[in-house]
Structure formats: structure tokens, C-alpha cells
Amino acid sequence: NKTAPLPEDIRAMKGGTPIVSLTAYTTPMARMMDAACDFVLVGDSVGMVVHGLPSTLGVTMEMMILHGQAVARGLSHAMLVIDMPFGSYEESPEQAFRNAARIMRETGAAAVKLEGGRHMADTIAFLVARGVPVMAHIGLTPQSINTLGGYKVQGRGDAAETLLADARAVSAAGAFSVVLEKVTATLADRITAEIPIPTIGIGASVGCDGQILVVDDMLGLFTAFKPKFVKRYASLGAEGEAAIAAYAAEVRARTFPAPEHTFADKAPRG
Ligand code: KIV
Ligand code: NA
Image (cartoon, rainbow, N blue to C red):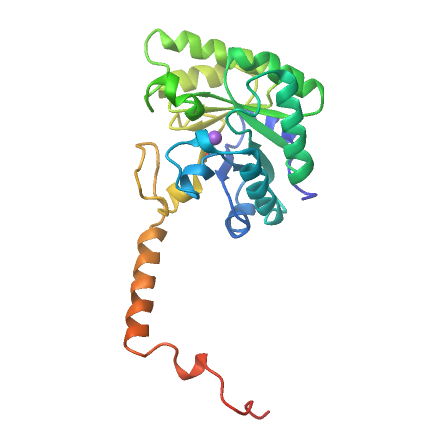
């Protein structure tokens, strides 16, 4: 992945052409988006989207590394970022470094992402000082769903000041960018204007320095539910279902396989 941008190149895109990113979990998905994206995130959303888990809490280091390696094989242009899973970094900066180093070593990722604002600032500074570029993630942080009390919009009313303080803290700690998830557009714009690192919005604002979506959401592959902030650019789930129904009908009617899909005794001449 020699031509990929580095975290510093992503940081330098602040205020410029919007940064384009998506999640990916497999090699073919990574290949599909490599040319179009500036960075690709192996999100811990892999747990819900690919493994059918009820939340991201059950995602392990092993899952992130296995999917990280698969995605790395599909990228030659976009930068690779990998989520640190729940329980792999919150205990101490040392624990975070040990697991971040393992993720980078075993996948070749250029950076890790972790959830949390002011309370993770010391950890972010510890990692950055030791060679681990960090993308922060504030607002709706799905790993804290049990203390947040649901997937609610973040930063309304008095909570805006707290979130702004989180954004300032992760920026000051040395994060090279920050994901803003499900925060009001007004607050996302205010954070984007106030901090010197790029904001990557998901359910945030068109004014963010970049955008990210879960690829299975935007392709219409994950249809268990659709958050308001998701735009479906395709309906691959419905298309796949129709294709499979057509296959099933042809098998039952003995019209598949056709002669061109089968082999004769003798190879054709010429
Ligand atoms: O896990 C994930 O997919 C994410 C993005 C939605 C930002 O964290
Ligand atoms: Na995530």
C-alpha cells in the first residue's frame, strides 16, 4: 500500500476537498472502494454487519485483526484504519499501546481508531508519542451504548459544551482526525470550525471535513434497520435476493446448469 496517504496527509486535508471514507470488512469490498476512498475503516461494526451480533460489544481483537488483514489485501490506494474493539484500550494507556501495536503489526494498518473524548485524551497522547496515529471517535460511541442509554442524537442543549470539550481534548492530545457520530449539524459545524484536525461525519453535517458510512448500509446490504443518517446508494440486498430466487427456480426447473456450464466427454477441437 505504498501510494496510500499517511495520517499526516489526511490531517492536511482539513478545510479542503472533503475526505471520502467507508467501512470495509472483506477483500472484495476493499477492492471495490480502494480507488474512490481516501481511507478505509475496518469498523467494529463488523460484529453487527457481518457476524450478526446485537451490538459492537462482543467484537474481539482476533476479529478486528482477521478482517483487517483481509481488507489490507484489497487496498493499494486508500489508507487503512482499524477500530480498537471494546475492552482492548480503556484500562490503561499501556494496554491500549500493546493492542494498537499488535493491530498495526499484524495488519499493516496506518492508524487505529478508538472511542472516547476527554477521558481518553491521556491514552491518545500516549499512543501518538509512541508511533501510533489515532483517529478519535466522539458523539454517539456505540461501545458505550449501555451507559449512553440508547442510540440517541448527541450534543443537544447543554451536552453541546461537553462534546465541544471532548473534540478539543482529542485534538490537543494529538489525534490526526475525529469521527463525529450522530451529533446535531450545528454542533458538528461548530466543532469543525474550532478544532485544527479534520472532522469525519456520520450523521453529523455536510460541513464536516469528511464523511464516512458503513458500506453495507449504503449498498443496501444490511437491512435489519436503517438509521436516518444512512443514504442507500444501491439495493444490493434486494438484488441478491432476486438473483438467488432466480437461481433456485432454474435449479428446480432443471434449466440450470445449461450446456455452456457443463463438460462434454471430449474437449472441443481447435
Ligand atoms: O464501526 C464503525 O463502522 C464506525 C464508523 C461508523 C465510524 O466506527
Ligand atoms: Na466503530
